[in-house]
Length: 160
Image (cartoon, rainbow, N blue to C red; front, side, top):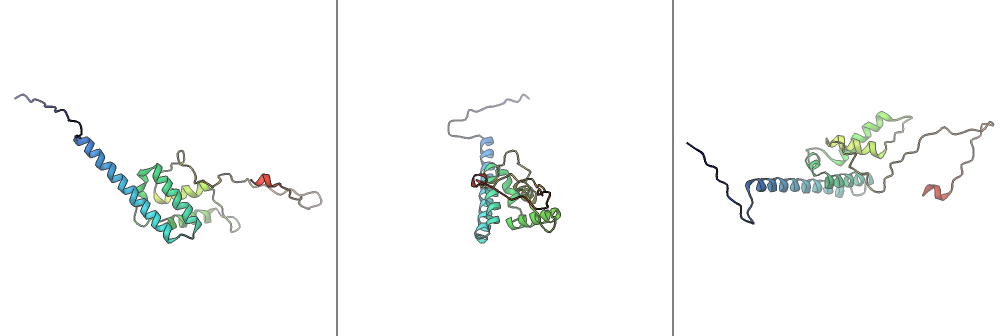
């Protein structure tokens, strides 16, 4: 018995089963992004006076725009902006010297991504506007032979 294959031409305006499946997946992904954005915005509304929560929330919303696949990780049960800040604190506590610890923006946002289980997108993720990535190198203060530290002088232009 010989099988005959039948191919129909699709009329303009109709979509085949592959297109329908693709569009359904795309709609599901968009819905997940919207839900993740809503979750972040809700936490931002609750913690509206906390500037660090706002910085991390805005970073995650920008990340969602560039990487919609991250939405599922942000929607994970129990994962919050505050939780990511607690994870940052734990990392900083391990690095502290004389009861003081500082994380660079890159280190801090990497901890946030790790907390949410998001792969590091450092090559294509830009730090939020207004955050400087340059961290001054620590230097020993110079002392004069008399033991007195030199006078600090700087112009306003050096700070701008």
